[in-house]
Length: 395
Image (cartoon, rainbow, N blue to C red; front, top):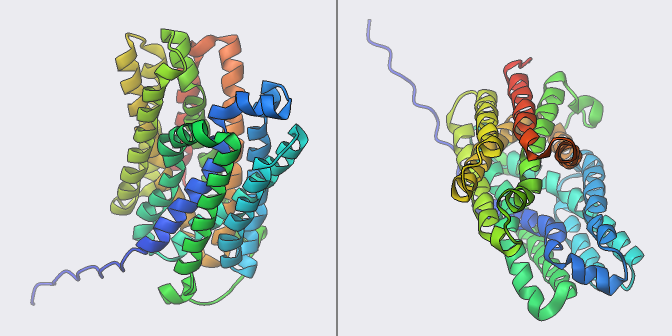
């Protein structure tokens, strides 16, 4: 009897790099619409004749509107198609940023900031659904990793660039620059989505859509895992600069380099996580391993304060290990029927906003009650919970 020859696996199709570049730019523009306000809070408070806490709370308005809009935009993209959201969302965001740049009062700024958050939420989840639809399962970790890298680039490039540009044109001019970025993103997405995703992948067929069709027990568990992961990331991303300032007495200018290294670790972790998600057979095991690993690093980061350089290195290591989990989770979440993929990934953005709000509130409570010494056990506990959920998979 002749020996059985192994059947080679079929070659993967070419990655849609042009679309991924446009999607990355779209994510960068959406993130920049809120994050680039950070260097100008004092200037905005003075120009708008409002208190600094009120101006800082504009980010909360943006985040809430972002999560709410994503909930409905994802479901709408499954029903009416993704292209109207992919092109109309960035254009609407550009108009809102232009409106924000001309605000003469705090109420105007609050209105435009809320609308901008809603416009950003109207296409960011849809971006990930489109990238997933145009790739096969074993490419989605890398594809989604590159799309999400646009968000990390905001911290590494967007905020420093905004601060530099703002010295010449002020915060109003920076908002107009973000509007231009959004228009460029809309143009790129228009050019790269001329061919329908179903045709590009050879797929077809429409089936049940909507929240009822999307909310399987598996999807619900993945969403809860996503909330846990965002809390773990947010606890460090939101409070890392304050932790360095309180622990080592650094000025605001002195935390710039540690924050840049933190952002770089997030980008590297996201890209490497995409590779792992596509090359290893069990994505939820990848997620669990990354979460358990980040729990250990978090304990060392907040509990072992032996010097600034080791602490910054641990911060870099923490965010890199934590970021390994995100592409694996997103690829697992995208592995649903195309008819509900927009709904599921829109729900993911909504749940991520809950994770950010949870991180801000839990971190504020922990800092007030126990100081930064409690951050390690809190972050590790949430990470272990997320990892345990990944190991308890059903279906």
